[in-house]
Image 1 (cartoon, helix red, strand yellow):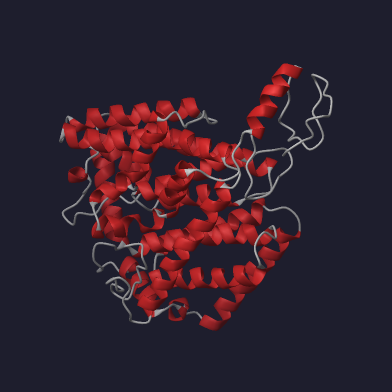
Image 2 (image 1 turned 30 degrees about the vertical axis):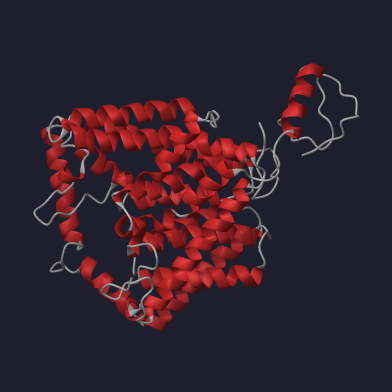
Length: 438
């Protein structure tokens, strides 16, 4: 992105080698832009590395929560607040919408708190609201300031999640890592929970798949990592992860241009036919024992808290509560998240939002979800990098079967993906791990 300083420039021309969006109107403005770009540091500072660590350790947040301190979940917000106080933030696409959504979340927490505990509900609302409003501009600043920031984030995230996946494989073999073992045959890796392990491995697969598709990573290494994470997903026995992976791969099939679409479609058909033939009508017999048990647990009417019937009962409880008072909500704090005597949380982030936070929280979550989807649609039309959009869309689909609105490790992934799409949207892709100054 550097260009020759000696080349004369017309006010309405752009020099060779300059990104297509860098348009200036006067020689003086051009000089200011050139000086700003030339002052852009090549090596990341401490602030950049702090954010790399915050983002890359998202897969470990639940384990650190239980082993270190519950305050671990506040680290992303603390980093965002520090960025704001040191004025290391920049405006992002959709910033006004994010601020409005954050305000709605906070108001919803205060209103619904009147039905439960105003302080506890308010704390949850303020934490989530500030995270939504402040994390995107803080991460966008790092993307704009440091050319290697995104690359370092991707490498660090893949490294951390691969370590967690390898730990999961050890647990699948009956071993223990840092005192963590498989529970009911389901590996937890270093994630603290099988579902989190599976979801983070899905994110890793979507990133790897895109890097391999674009020739950015060695194919042998890429295939090896894909296998590790695929085995990890099976070992986690997380049905939500498998749903998310299916959505993410379908996204590639329909969004990718050229022969890759037909190749993936053919492979998918061959795989389905092969499974049907091999299973001979008994698909569940092909699953690992832990996954087979999980499927039986969810589909068996006599199962425990995770069975479909009990989940549907939680949905119905929430719907009845909303019908009785669609405005207020029962409170956003954890003391009011249970819907039935079993203590099950509503596993649908939109329905749970309306049930606990009332109509305002439902509007806030619906608005930000719509913004994410529209941003993804715009993004894939203007760049060949599909991973951020695939991650964001598949996470939203996962949210329809989960209670993610209070889980900051998921919000960090979604908000970072959204920011990356805002910072990687040139007319011609510059590469999956490079950023563009606007």
